[in-house]
Image (tube, rainbow, N blue to C red; front, top):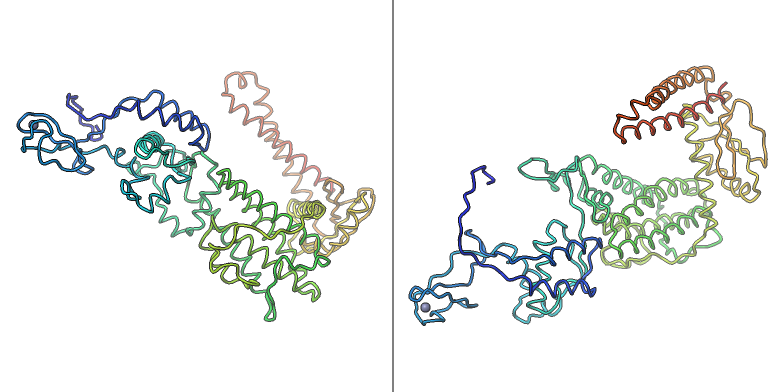
Length: 536
Ligand SMILES: [Zn+2]
């Protein structure tokens, strides 16, 4: 047994429930669509178990639990089963009754939970209102113990399945993927995690990382993702609030001056509408992790990293300033509403501090789950993508060539498309600021300038002349050394892969890893050689 004592089998009388008559209607409820499982494959497990169901031993020799309602007669030995304590034997009328000492299996009691908690068998208002309900969220490990039995007993006693949808989530496991257990000592206390990282950080991380119905390996450090995200949102919100001047008047996203919207405004409003649609659908389809991923990407990347940075250039512009501030507040406010189910505390805290035209509700909990219907702009989306790609490429070159953070290099572009040329020219100031560059030259066509680092993007070639920006001689030596090092690593991988014995004997995943390494080294080498060419 659990204490390692050898178990000695002994025959004894026990109480059983005949299950076949209960299983039939429960199977039927699934087959006719009254009952639905998410993910769907769990329906097969449910069917299999009910198809092969066996009678259920429900008596337990324990102290705690519902007592079995059966009395043995001291005179004739017959058993009386009754809802209320009987005063006499149902068989001979004798009064020497002894109650069965056993209690019910705990799952027998808990299968009654959906309706017994509502006052059943009394016809209470709660029971009439809340039974049956829509959704049960639970773990797949108790699909049979609890969920299937609630369905069977609900159908038996009330004639209705207790819920329509059963969402079976994954199970949180330890960092190595083993089941958490107290005896193994590999548990994480959620209260500790909440104290260390914040309750919203923990909640968001769990939502973000748990793909629907798949188990989640959780190490404490994973919760840093949620904490960093929460900090990012908090800091961006603080920035927005600090930049509202005393005479700021709130305004709705409905009343924007269309003529003053720039490419980033149109882009962020388009993205907001898209993200809302995506999140709404993901919630409908029980994919909370997709909701978390969409919002993470939007709030962190689109809003904080791009839109807020972009807006900084325009805050001092007297003509655009008020509208930009209204946009910052408006987009932030609607993002908070979308994020609220995943980060309830932080979003409420920030939301209460935002100046809103009229506050739509007393609490963000009561604010509508919707965003302002704005006109979406695929053109702005495409233009912004080009600008982001350009800024990203310049940042990458800066990093690879170790251009000092304070240096403001000149950026030279070859852009054949006239419309794109015009777009990029229009947002020159933003691009320079975001890429930390000094000058931006845009040409329709251009031979590669000598001594320039380069990157190729859809629709444009990017050059960064390095003269005077870095010490080319020192950089060349560093890059040459790095090239040699990576080349040696690549050759070592090649030798192993060319070795017939290695290929024959090593496990497939080891060979595959080696192949991945080689192709990774090749990519790095190509990039190094390209950069080397620029400094030669
Ligand atoms: Zn009797």
